[in-house]
Structure formats: structure tokens, C-alpha cells
Image (cartoon, rainbow, N blue to C red):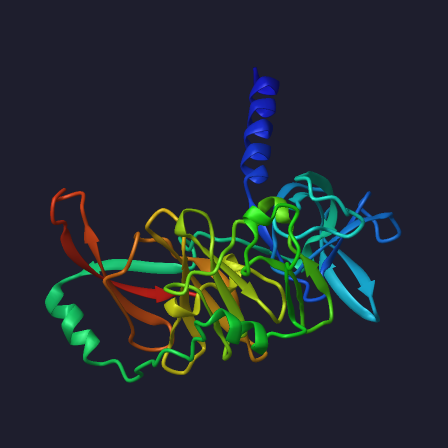
Length: 320
């Protein structure tokens, strides 16, 4: 009986582990290898910011030497795909998934925010009082909404498809590839390319070097021209709300289900990196920073009144 329970627990633990999503956090891309060692055959190279699933830890923590640097981490087995970018040595456009081994020092876990954020309900009166204490007022940045102007601005950095197999489906807003600041060309997999330019929602944000297109079901398709990272880690600049000293910021993007997927970012070495998800509500009515780690927000709760809903008020704090 005891052996049986151990087996069951092992299966459950593996299943939970297999559901973990990670982002590639290596600016130059991450090599996927055929075995859990540096000398193993390179299967492919994943671009910065793409999401992979961790299937299993394959070693205890060890230290490896990369370009004269000693880096601590573990070998892990992952599952990856080419649904966005065509991966090296894969020239055809069919969809595929693969498995391989990477060193997890170059992965960043996608978090739900439950461990990193404390939130609790407050009264409307307290919300108004705290709102009056805020010291920073954020102005939205420049957004270029003309496609021709965007093409000129991103000349030699973004290439667009100009020839089509079927002229009936000819379009001017289909991206072919992005050349990152590192000189890496990331080719868009056209089998999964349903991104288009909508003048009411799409645009290029020079300050952030982010291009926002419209994806399936009116979702946001956001591309960092610097790195090739997409909406899960760079978000849509329309939803950026920075903390007073710009150490942290709220960000988000349209999910295609009439809701915004929110997350926090933290500034490190002059750049903002993904910190944790914050999907507390479909949409915030209001969100304000009180100081660098404390914020207030309000949402509409439809569970108590299916017709109008009830506005509720909260205070939150980043514990990181």
C-alpha cells in the first residue's frame, strides 16, 4: 500500500511540474540540446521571451562555465514549439513541437502572483483617501498609428511580405521577419500568422520599441523590435502604469476574450523584465500606485449583481 501511494504521489507531482510555463530569459537566445550536458548536440535555438513548458528536472543544482562566467542552475527537460517563430534548421512552415534539454539559469518562471503580492479589500472612503496621496501622474507615450509611417520608421528592422501565392489574399500588414538589436533575424511562421493592422487599435510605440498588431478574436499581438519578445513579457504600452520612481510598472494586453491579462514588470539594469502575472480581474476600473510597492485598484464584481455589478476597492503590495 505504501509503495502504491508513493507511485501515485510521484505521478501527481510530475503532472503538476509538467504544467509549469517558463520564459526564455537569454537575450541571445537559448540552445536546446539533445542531452543534459554542454557538449551535447544542439537541436535548436529558442528566441528570447518565448514560452516553453518545463517537463522535468534532470539534475541537482550545478555550476557550469560559459564564456568565463560561472553560472548556477539545473538541467531541465522542456517542450517547445514553432507556433510563432520558425526555429533554426526548420525551414518548412508546418507546426511542430519538440523536446530537449536546457540549463534553467536562462529560464524565468511564469508566476500567478499569489506568493509575490498581498491584496485585501478596503472601503470606498479609504480608496479615495489613498488615491489623494499619489504623487506621480503618468502620461501616455507617443503612438504611431499609420501603417506606412510605421514601415518607414522600422525600415531594415521589420520586413513585410510583398508576394503572395494567392493574390486574392494579398495584404500589406503581414510581417515576414523581425531583426533584433542583436542582429538576429526572427522569421514569423506564416502558418500561425493571423496578425493584422487595425488603425483603431494597432500602432508602434517609439519609446518602448514595441509594435502592436491585432491577433485572432481581437487579441493583442505585441512584438518587441529590440528582442523579439511578445505580449506575455512586453505587453501593450497602452496599459503601462509605472510606480512613482519607475522601479515597477503594471502592464497588460488584450486576451481576445474581452479581458486584459495583467502582469507586473521590474526595472533591472535599465530594462523592464517580467515579474509576475496579476490576473485579479477581467479589467480594472481604476489602478493607482501609492508608493514603489503599494497600489490601489477597483473592479466591478458581477457575482453579486448579474446586471450592473458592484464596484469594489482593494489595496495591494508587492512583496518582492
